[in-house]
Amino acid sequence: MRFIAQRQDLFHLLTRLQTVVGQKAALPILSNILLEAKGNLLTVVGTDLVIGLKAFAEAKVFEEGITTLPARRLTQLIRELTCHAVEISKGKDDIVEITANASRFKIHSLPATEYPPFPDMQGAKKFEIDAKTFRESLYKTAFAVSKEDSRYVLTGVLVRMEEGLITFVGTDGKRLSKAHLPPADSESFQGNYILPIRAVEELLRNLEGEERMNLYLQNERVAIETPSFFFTTKLLPGEFPDFMRVIPEKPQEMLTLHREELTSLLRQVSLFTADSSQSVRFTFAPQELRLSANAADVGEGRVTMPVQYSGEKIDIAFNPGYFLDILRHCKGETVTLGLTDSFNPGLLIDQEEGSPFHHKTTPLFMLMPMRLDGN
Image (cartoon, rainbow, N blue to C red; front, side, top):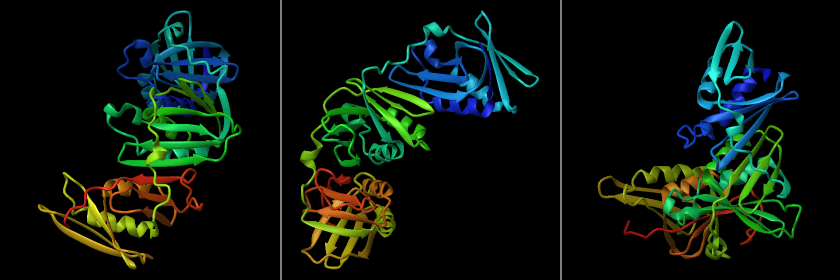
């Protein structure tokens, strides 16, 4: 094997794979990445046996071949080089030589035959999707997944194919985020797929800047293909809870709130919550929303903002951190808050979406209320 690649292109490929390749892998070969030079293309592969990433770059190939090299050490070396192009060659032994201008380096490789085969997605259901919208849907739901391993099935993002609509859901039981993609090209296809949060984080990094992608679906694995990479992940086993059952079908009150003003006031009053039980009281009265919190060892905070509300007084408490997380994942100038009473979940709808509320098809966030105290 012998090829020349642009240092910047090579470093970009290696950086992409750094969070995929395990530094404390059970098998030594999994700390390596696989490099294959063929035609005029360099392919670099990394895997931890759960997720795998294959990335591509142009290269001038003099002799086709394949090898594996330590991922971390190779990336560090390429980062420190100052040349424009790097030559990598391997003879019949396990030594790989890297040439950068007048510099020469030799690294021990491991046989490519020991590297795990990249998963075969032959026979998978394939959909062509707008990559930007897919990434945005993952971004709007990933923050809400559970951080507790005891709730294993909730530590990933649900991707549901149903009636031609792709629905994304993240929840930890206290909050929920639901996003949608436009109808897919197969209304008859149905299925639930739970992406591990690590896989979602990798996709958020790698899909940035991509325009089109292919989504491949199998019973136990999902893959994403773009012109610059091919990504695959095992799915989380188990049955995702029936999230539609807990979303209110039609809240009694739908209030429009200015997002930036609410964010600023909620940050202010959240400074007066107790560390042990963070809770802010939302009091809706005619033409006014009052936010209040108090903690015995801190003090008390009260702020108000005007709202177009003329109904009966409503008191409801929310975790301010969770509420702010939702506001950060909205983009519209205003959000709609749907309320039923003090004890049922609150719904938040980003008005950038611009669509009227529909229980099943509207992208939304849901937040469970907290116990009201005496503040």
